[in-house]
Image (tube, rainbow, N blue to C red; front, side, top):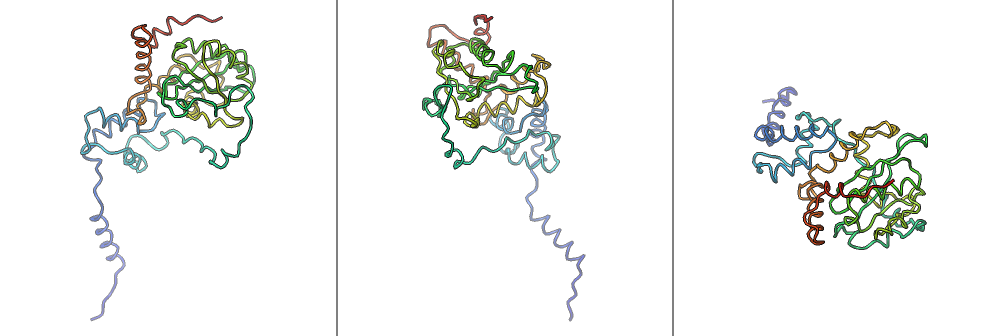
Length: 305
């Protein structure tokens, strides 16, 4: 008897076998979880990925392994178009930092003060509270526009966005001092900055408050990666080329709150604001000032001209 192969029959049998071999999607039994992740992302203006919300919901939201999925699976669902969140809603990935070989090749000397290699180990390893990174965000390239100073505390990732009159060194130093007093100088031990001329004279200004300034190697802004990541998030609210003088204080506050109220995996799915406030309370107790808060520190901060 002669065997005859029919391509269409073979394809149907193959498709049926593949269908039966696949593990069914779990999305049906965790639809409530998926809907809440979608809602959280939408509530933050679709300016962040799902990981923080997935972790927070699984840790504190009453979802167990049976009625939830991991971050990797959520990304798969988004890519497959199975969620309200689309791939175009997710923030862009940051540019990759230079290779270790390229990092080691940089031998440029620091010009403005102590180099980042002199920074205390507790700051390098994020072992203690009070070590900050700072950077400037430039708006229009006219040279007449205002600028933004961003300060990120390395341990908690809490970030402050502060408006400057300009990017000139005097305005930058004055704005940095105002921002520090706005938070409370006792929350600062060190500040790591770029090696640009806009930060000239900052070492002396901070020295008067007992705060050490350290500077990255020239053209090595990746050495202060925490604040660089947050700058990318601020750029979602203040696009490149947009005049900062035309950006409202409310818009800047919205960017700041977005970063500080976002649950982070590296913080045990708590927010930077929660961890930061806990450290402020501890400082107040240790110094005999009682419980502190960012609000009380801001109200008591000295006024600068």
